[in-house]
Length: 286
Image (cartoon, rainbow, N blue to C red):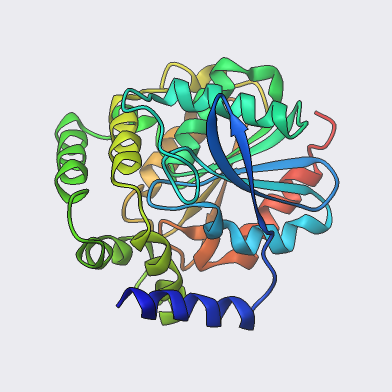
């Protein structure tokens, strides 16, 4: 089964557009993997839980004509090392700052999807001068800030329980939640490969950090231009959460991606990239 996952991904990779090569660096004594391609204003991509930098393939390929596009495997995901089991969102934000120091980026467009969007908000809280613009996609003000307490608790319990499942069963449970029913089999297969390599510890820590975080106090105080990008059929972070952000962040605009679910950047990459490109180009010198 896992050989089939890997073989499918290799075939898909060779048949489609290039992806930036994976590079490793030491940040605060931990190995961090990342992809770095293109020249121009920096655009930093922060993935969600159960994802890694491979989930940004369409953005790395398409947006690197005008931007330096950087996508990491967060500590606890992909080819990066697991963090300490006490890691919080604030710790990831500190790691991100150290990582950007290492690759020579002082200020960037910061784009975060799902858990990466929570991280992007907390990074802005701690390092506002390093954020040129915020692009928040299919995300939350932390689960604590966007979901009822009962729903937040239920999600966290599920994540802790299912993190010990065999990869095959884990993949079967999670991947269908990320896309609309109309998503292609190739796309689902690509995501199955990524999810099959999840880090149980990293997944639990990202889930706990989501459940513990509430950024609602931050939202009215975000002073940089902010783009919200949401799949119109996102079942995990529905549009009412996008509207919460739009109505609270002073300079926010909302772009809804038609026929897209939770991973709108993968399901409708052309529309997603068009919105990101437009927004970043119009805010180069903010």
